[in-house]
Length: 294
Length: 267
Image (cartoon, rainbow over all chains, first blue to last red; front, side, top):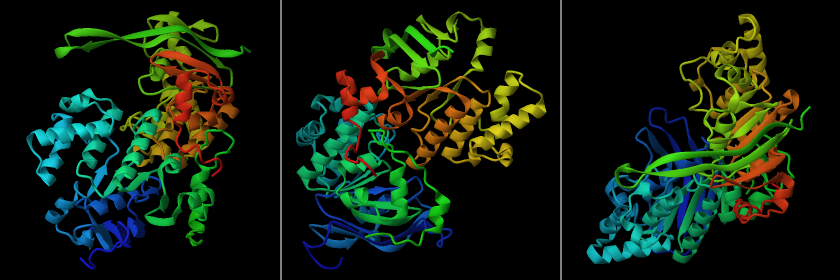
């Protein structure tokens, strides 16, 4: 809880965040990761599986598994009421007040992250009751508004998750996450399990909501196509480290780091003009000292 | 040689679904509705569509892994639906399949050498020593080593398991390989490796592929012809370059418009 309200401060700032297993603190799964995110902007974290992109996201929410720990670093979150604070230092109880209310998260699998025995309306209402104390008719009306915001007819509030399609379930997840109008939305591969047309709809919805509510969005993905559609800034991670960061235009059209170049060369294009080139990991390990760009 | 190695004419397949309260009512779902496709010899035919469009049902029906209600599947002049179990088994050697999930499609209790050699054993091809030589050659070809024969599937990464799946299908030297979403569970870098491997093997072994996918960027890369499916029907088919440039059906246009990141022209 450092300085008070500071408008110049970005919404979220990660400073030298490192994550390791508790049993072997020297084995860094995420190594000195720093980046900033402004309100109303989207930062995409890109990388292969095992690059540490999901761990980074989970550490912001304080949701790392029991076996892992934040070895070093600060997670500075700029909140209107309490100013800039390092949320990595907060107790679980204090974090509860932030999770869902000020920072919300959407997961990859809408099938497994919804409770099958509760109606979707109830599940959306949970955080409204918990954080804002809404009840009765007010709560009902708010749930209906939220459902319509994400493009589901409000009479579906009484439906159970299995009565909805994959895309609709992800829309419910989005409604849950934006219920308390969070300042920061973390989306961990929210469209990976969806069909391509549904994916396009969900990306559009997220982008609209982000603008309308002036949220900051941290979007985890491995798909450069999605990055090109939704990002303002891009952070590329490789083996726990950030190898390149910059604006979308910079990273996609003028990548500096050999890993970013190699990763982009793996992405098939819709025109089919490009020859695919798999990543030569041995070569990359030899050239790891190359500058990491901006 | 025939221009078409595999043809399916007017396939229909209907599933009965329990519906209504407590599942007492029944409703019919048309998974395939008068589907006809032709696979050119030595080429790749992509089948695209969203989940529920019937593309996986089509794959299973082509290989007679599932019975069809009506229609015929012609492979090198034979109607597969009319063959008895024994002759079907001998034809299966030429029709192989690579599955989507490299984690679920390999028996976790079998060693890789046995997994890859199983087909040879079933079809009684060669002596034990000959089979072993073939398995080693195939493993080397897909980028694995002889030492890997003794390992179990869980010791491998997703990309390597998919290589095992490919070796398992190709060790029989089939003519047609049905690939059901072979790269959709893989990272983009691994995906590129596997796609290139499939392309090289097609050249070397004169394979014809049926490539089931929902990723139109991947399809653009690997396929020569394309079939677009929607709710059990073929809505459009033709050459890939042609369809991507001039999609005629609204559904195809929507699919193409939904490809993420068309702004990346060259990365």
